[in-house]
Length: 94
Image (tube, rainbow, N blue to C red; front, side, top):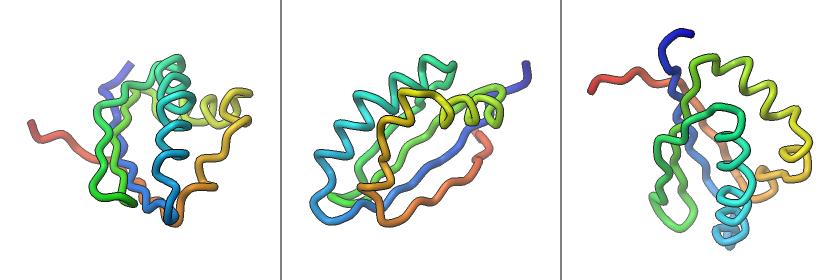
């Protein structure tokens, strides 16, 4: 496979959604991503409503399709807690 492709994901949460979102993120999103071969490189609170995380995979697009189609992922909808989503691939310098 090729080099790891890294995606930055920045979310703006709805007012009061931090705890509920964090629970879904830690209990469903992260374990499922990891089970499908993703590496979660870091997750950070920028403020009460701003969340930033980085996720990587060698075959990102194919793995992303499998992730969203997975039955465990279908059971949760993190977008219910989000006002805005920004995603972009980043290039490692160091």
